[in-house]
Image 1: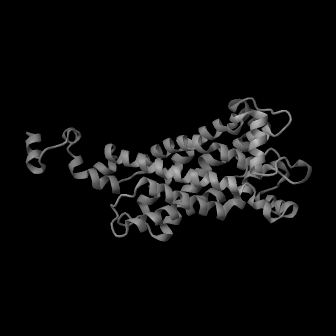
Image 2: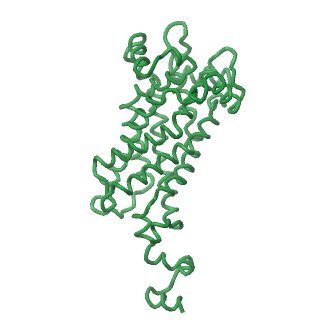
Image 3: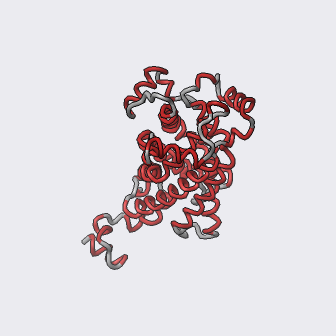
Length: 326
């Protein structure tokens, strides 16, 4: 009886809709306008795990160059020298030293970032569209959220692991052993070093990236909000957004890295770290690791937005939230 009623109204019913007839009224429209926070968390988590496995070697090289100081302590003459020495001393997989740290951290990091962005977007969007100010605020909120929940402890542990490898006798034998040593030596606060710099960095990062990507998407869609953006184009938008964020906030990234290294105790706070870098090494030190960071971040952001959009498209077709059903 129910099937005949829907058949008379809509014609032949695809199998998934026969089992869940409410999708006929709520499917497409609701998928766009409903609460996507939970979907964003899951899609972001999957995206983070895939992305970091692809781009980690560039993150490793960038961190090594940022930790490299002038004078007798300087170890690398540049990008290629760092890669060459790492491979000679530790083999190709030496470029993946500390991957487990970022892999464990990237899943909650990307999940919290996109979950926060989708939640804020749902509250701030008007007719599915964000204003210029709203794009920046949603991105800023996403960056602050990921900085507090995941990025600060993850980055601190990662930098200490990479920094430990630079010593004559590395202390850390593995992820759990290393984290245990850090907490034993510095307390739980030892994994929250540089939190201020990290919040500033991630907040500005995501404000810039989401603003650029959302603006480019809106430009492509013109006056048709339902228009689909090709995934390769989404990747290109992400590449541009990544480059913009690197050029704008690399100094914050350098300060954050120094604040999270094994010698972070010599800096009283974020401002003191910035002043000491300025006085001892000059303004160029604030742009150490820019080239490897640029290559990593551009690929990172391009892959992230492409993969994330792909998973969200799938979720919007097969997964309907309570808000969307109602």
